Image 1: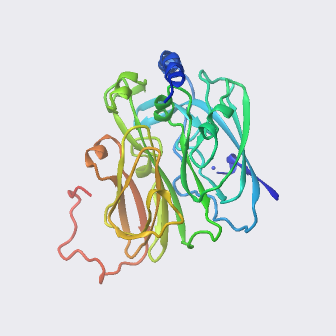
Image 2: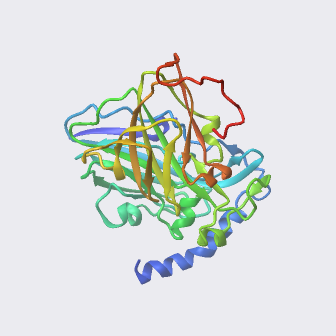
Image 3: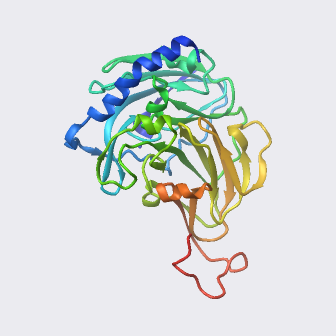
Length: 352
């Protein structure tokens, strides 16, 4: 078995559990409110690049991979004029997208940054084992923990921090995707993208400038102030997905949550193939307008780009767009008036 190192820098209900969650409730709130008081900390760009996905699997025998991740607590830009203390994997939201082949062995080496205020860990939905690795990887600030698992099932899977209270760690940005390709791989496409949806629960109202802090009360009430793609309000408007006419593209889309289900839709496009619920071995569903993705779930969608323009990514629970949840797929190339043509011009007053 060959060993292959994945350096993330290159990627750009038991009673006991309930008691543990209660014990960690107050520290979670205190850490968010107390961290980076005064906002003198450096503001980090936490937005994961949607245009970067590791290349498709090109090996046919099982390999062993070393995945090194660092959990950090950093101040990032939540919206224009608004900052927030994020908890992250490798200083980005979502965390790095990982890619392996079914049958591969994954060694995870998780380091919790020395200046963290919280313990952190990681739960891989792709891992068969207690807690998906959560117990094996629970690390105090400055500590490194390791475990390994074999990727037994192909699919697109979520990973996330599972330190109590789990919902708080996820809402603050600790989630990502791992792609486990089937033995035969995936049908080739011209470009692949990485997008995840989440919610952020601030004490302050939506749009309040300055440094915002977490509201545990709103989190428990499932009442977020912000809905985000890739960590920040309007992040994928400022960093759009980029492609060209004639290309076939694939979006790996997941929901970190922790609470809201997404009705993922690209305005002006139809998904040619949908790998529902992240299954890469089931027959894909064809010609789909909107896909439902639950918290902790994922999907892959393929579609061909026939005409140029800005295509808007939304959750079709469209009120959420008013709270930051929108992105752009920017397609360049020649017009095709047989497929689409505005006979009387276009208005900038249209909603999209």
